[in-house]
Image 1 (cartoon, rainbow, N blue to C red):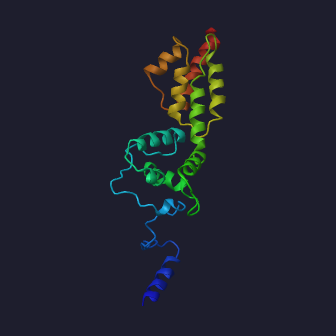
Image 2 (cartoon, helix red, strand yellow):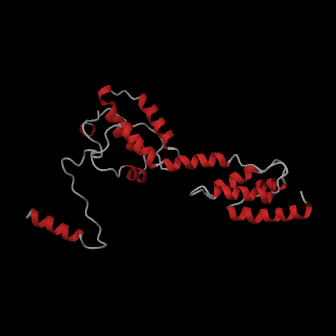
Length: 216
Protein backbone atom coordinates (compact mmCIF):
# COMPACT_ATOMS: atom_id res chain seq x y z
CA UNK A 1 0.00 0.00 0.00
CA UNK A 2 2.84 2.38 0.90
CA UNK A 3 4.57 1.68 -2.40
CA UNK A 4 1.35 2.37 -4.33
CA UNK A 5 0.87 5.71 -2.54
CA UNK A 6 4.47 6.70 -3.28
CA UNK A 7 4.03 5.69 -6.91
CA UNK A 8 0.91 7.88 -7.12
CA UNK A 9 2.81 10.84 -5.61
CA UNK A 10 5.58 10.40 -8.17
CA UNK A 11 3.06 10.40 -11.00
CA UNK A 12 1.41 13.58 -9.71
CA UNK A 13 4.76 15.37 -9.27
CA UNK A 14 5.68 14.61 -12.90
CA UNK A 15 2.63 16.48 -14.26
CA UNK A 16 3.61 19.99 -15.53
CA UNK A 17 2.25 23.06 -13.66
CA UNK A 18 1.13 20.98 -10.69
CA UNK A 19 2.17 22.25 -7.25
CA UNK A 20 4.76 19.86 -5.85
CA UNK A 21 3.80 18.05 -2.63
CA UNK A 22 5.60 18.92 0.61
CA UNK A 23 8.50 16.55 1.13
CA UNK A 24 8.29 14.27 4.12
CA UNK A 25 10.87 14.79 6.85
CA UNK A 26 13.30 11.95 7.38
CA UNK A 27 15.59 11.11 10.28
CA UNK A 28 18.53 12.84 8.58
CA UNK A 29 16.70 15.81 7.05
CA UNK A 30 17.23 17.97 10.15
CA UNK A 31 21.01 17.83 9.69
CA UNK A 32 22.72 20.75 8.01
CA UNK A 33 24.14 18.61 5.22
CA UNK A 34 26.09 21.39 3.56
CA UNK A 35 28.78 20.97 6.25
CA UNK A 36 31.32 18.18 6.36
CA UNK A 37 32.09 15.97 9.34
CA UNK A 38 32.39 16.56 12.21
CA UNK A 39 30.57 19.92 11.92
CA UNK A 40 27.28 18.53 10.59
CA UNK A 41 26.99 16.06 13.49
CA UNK A 42 27.71 18.54 16.27
CA UNK A 43 24.61 19.20 18.36
CA UNK A 44 24.20 22.89 19.10
CA UNK A 45 23.37 23.62 22.77
CA UNK A 46 19.75 24.56 23.46
CA UNK A 47 20.90 27.69 25.27
CA UNK A 48 22.66 28.94 22.13
CA UNK A 49 20.98 31.97 20.54
CA UNK A 50 21.92 33.33 17.15
CA UNK A 51 23.23 36.91 17.21
CA UNK A 52 20.63 39.60 16.69
CA UNK A 53 21.78 41.56 13.65
CA UNK A 54 20.50 42.91 10.35
CA UNK A 55 20.05 40.19 7.74
CA UNK A 56 22.51 40.35 4.87
CA UNK A 57 20.69 40.86 1.53
CA UNK A 58 23.68 40.78 -0.83
CA UNK A 59 23.89 44.53 -1.50
CA UNK A 60 26.62 45.58 0.94
CA UNK A 61 30.22 44.66 1.70
CA UNK A 62 30.30 40.96 2.72
CA UNK A 63 33.49 41.42 4.74
CA UNK A 64 31.77 43.94 7.01
CA UNK A 65 28.93 41.50 7.63
CA UNK A 66 31.36 38.73 8.57
CA UNK A 67 33.28 41.06 10.90
CA UNK A 68 30.07 42.09 12.65
CA UNK A 69 28.96 38.46 12.93
CA UNK A 70 32.26 37.36 14.51
CA UNK A 71 32.18 40.31 16.91
CA UNK A 72 28.69 39.41 18.11
CA UNK A 73 29.50 35.72 18.38
CA UNK A 74 32.43 36.57 20.66
CA UNK A 75 30.10 37.70 23.45
CA UNK A 76 28.00 34.52 23.30
CA UNK A 77 29.22 31.93 25.84
CA UNK A 78 30.23 28.90 23.76
CA UNK A 79 32.66 26.16 24.77
CA UNK A 80 35.81 25.90 22.67
CA UNK A 81 34.93 22.46 21.31
CA UNK A 82 31.58 23.74 19.97
CA UNK A 83 32.64 27.15 18.70
CA UNK A 84 33.54 26.13 15.15
CA UNK A 85 30.23 24.34 14.62
CA UNK A 86 28.24 27.21 16.17
CA UNK A 87 29.98 29.73 13.93
CA UNK A 88 29.18 27.64 10.86
CA UNK A 89 25.59 26.72 11.70
CA UNK A 90 24.66 30.11 13.09
CA UNK A 91 25.85 32.08 10.09
CA UNK A 92 22.90 31.11 7.87
CA UNK A 93 20.49 32.79 10.29
CA UNK A 94 22.07 36.18 9.45
CA UNK A 95 21.22 35.92 5.74
CA UNK A 96 17.99 36.55 3.85
CA UNK A 97 16.37 33.62 2.10
CA UNK A 98 17.74 34.60 -1.33
CA UNK A 99 21.31 35.15 -0.15
CA UNK A 100 21.17 31.90 1.80
CA UNK A 101 20.10 30.09 -1.35
CA UNK A 102 22.90 31.67 -3.40
CA UNK A 103 25.57 30.89 -0.85
CA UNK A 104 24.65 27.32 -0.04
CA UNK A 105 24.46 25.93 -3.52
CA UNK A 106 27.62 24.00 -2.66
CA UNK A 107 27.59 20.18 -2.77
CA UNK A 108 26.55 18.37 0.45
CA UNK A 109 29.25 17.87 3.10
CA UNK A 110 31.62 20.17 1.22
CA UNK A 111 32.11 23.03 3.72
CA UNK A 112 34.88 21.97 6.06
CA UNK A 113 35.33 24.97 8.39
CA UNK A 114 34.11 28.46 9.23
CA UNK A 115 37.08 29.90 7.33
CA UNK A 116 35.99 27.88 4.29
CA UNK A 117 32.45 29.21 4.68
CA UNK A 118 33.65 32.82 4.93
CA UNK A 119 35.77 32.44 1.79
CA UNK A 120 32.76 31.08 -0.11
CA UNK A 121 30.62 33.94 1.20
CA UNK A 122 33.12 36.66 0.27
CA UNK A 123 33.64 35.22 -3.20
CA UNK A 124 29.91 34.84 -3.81
CA UNK A 125 29.17 38.47 -2.94
CA UNK A 126 32.44 40.10 -4.02
CA UNK A 127 30.54 42.23 -6.55
CA UNK A 128 28.75 43.96 -3.68
CA UNK A 129 32.11 44.93 -2.19
CA UNK A 130 33.27 46.28 -5.55
CA UNK A 131 30.03 48.23 -5.88
CA UNK A 132 30.62 49.98 -2.55
CA UNK A 133 34.15 50.88 -3.63
CA UNK A 134 32.82 52.27 -6.91
CA UNK A 135 30.28 54.40 -5.04
CA UNK A 136 33.00 55.68 -2.69
CA UNK A 137 35.11 56.91 -5.58
CA UNK A 138 32.04 58.29 -7.34
CA UNK A 139 31.44 60.70 -4.46
CA UNK A 140 34.94 62.06 -5.04
CA UNK A 141 33.93 63.37 -8.48
CA UNK A 142 33.12 67.04 -8.02
CA UNK A 143 32.56 69.99 -10.31
CA UNK A 144 35.77 71.98 -10.63
CA UNK A 145 35.89 75.67 -9.80
CA UNK A 146 35.57 76.98 -13.38
CA UNK A 147 34.16 73.84 -14.97
CA UNK A 148 31.05 74.19 -17.11
CA UNK A 149 28.08 72.10 -16.06
CA UNK A 150 28.05 70.18 -19.33
CA UNK A 151 31.60 68.91 -18.70
CA UNK A 152 30.79 67.89 -15.13
CA UNK A 153 27.67 66.03 -16.32
CA UNK A 154 29.75 64.28 -18.99
CA UNK A 155 32.44 63.17 -16.55
CA UNK A 156 29.94 61.86 -14.04
CA UNK A 157 27.94 60.07 -16.71
CA UNK A 158 31.00 58.27 -18.06
CA UNK A 159 31.93 57.10 -14.54
CA UNK A 160 28.45 55.79 -13.67
CA UNK A 161 28.39 53.69 -16.84
CA UNK A 162 31.10 51.48 -15.29
CA UNK A 163 29.03 50.74 -12.17
CA UNK A 164 26.61 47.80 -12.49
CA UNK A 165 23.07 48.16 -11.12
CA UNK A 166 23.54 51.66 -9.73
CA UNK A 167 20.20 53.06 -8.62
CA UNK A 168 18.82 56.44 -9.63
CA UNK A 169 18.59 57.82 -6.09
CA UNK A 170 22.32 57.26 -5.59
CA UNK A 171 23.18 58.83 -8.95
CA UNK A 172 21.10 61.94 -8.23
CA UNK A 173 22.62 62.25 -4.75
CA UNK A 174 26.17 61.93 -6.13
CA UNK A 175 25.41 64.53 -8.80
CA UNK A 176 24.01 67.00 -6.25
CA UNK A 177 26.86 66.51 -3.77
CA UNK A 178 29.43 67.11 -6.51
CA UNK A 179 28.10 70.47 -7.65
CA UNK A 180 30.31 73.39 -6.66
CA UNK A 181 29.12 75.64 -3.84
CA UNK A 182 27.10 78.62 -4.89
CA UNK A 183 26.39 77.21 -8.34
CA UNK A 184 22.84 78.24 -9.43
CA UNK A 185 21.85 74.72 -10.43
CA UNK A 186 22.72 73.43 -6.94
CA UNK A 187 20.21 75.81 -5.37
CA UNK A 188 17.61 74.80 -7.97
CA UNK A 189 18.03 71.08 -7.39
CA UNK A 190 17.99 71.47 -3.58
CA UNK A 191 14.85 73.61 -3.56
CA UNK A 192 13.08 71.30 -6.00
CA UNK A 193 14.60 67.76 -5.83
CA UNK A 194 14.68 65.61 -8.96
CA UNK A 195 12.98 62.22 -8.96
CA UNK A 196 15.31 60.48 -11.41
CA UNK A 197 18.38 60.98 -13.58
CA UNK A 198 16.36 61.89 -16.67
CA UNK A 199 14.80 64.81 -14.81
CA UNK A 200 18.25 65.90 -13.63
CA UNK A 201 19.55 65.77 -17.19
CA UNK A 202 16.60 67.73 -18.63
CA UNK A 203 16.82 70.44 -16.01
CA UNK A 204 20.60 70.61 -16.37
CA UNK A 205 20.22 71.29 -20.10
CA UNK A 206 18.54 74.61 -19.26
CA UNK A 207 21.56 75.68 -17.22
CA UNK A 208 23.94 74.40 -19.87
CA UNK A 209 22.23 76.63 -22.43
CA UNK A 210 22.56 79.48 -19.96
CA UNK A 211 26.29 78.76 -19.71
CA UNK A 212 26.60 78.87 -23.47
CA UNK A 213 24.78 82.20 -23.60
CA UNK A 214 26.38 83.91 -20.61
CA UNK A 215 29.67 81.96 -20.36
CA UNK A 216 29.32 81.54 -16.60
